[in-house]
Length: 158
Image (cartoon, rainbow, N blue to C red; front, side, top):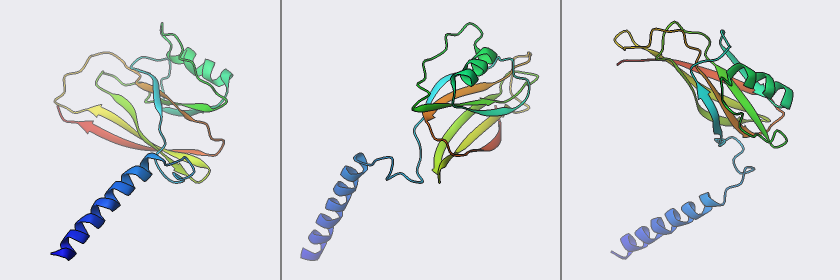
């Protein structure tokens, strides 16, 4: 009986200590972990006709990207000294129902690996019968190392 009580107390302390330690993690502790990012903007209409993924680290490049997607939108503020922007374009599609979405960003050595999901409508989906160009812009902590993109293609069954 005493052994069971000791074991339960030990498990409880371990869980509590792990939970508290997780709240104090620093970016250095997260060497190969997930990186937080924020969505700046997304849409289904742009001037970009081909699939493209771009890393933006300077104002001139950000202005160029924004000119391709703005369509009446005000550009969000980004501090390019401490942040960078990833622009993901799915390219032109013949109908609506397509979507591009960053799923996660993971630190990998001196850079990041970005997991992107591109979703297409299945054959039974009702879609807008118009050309679309899905895109997403995200901001995340700046690194000067390489940024690699992994793209997952997925079809939605409506």
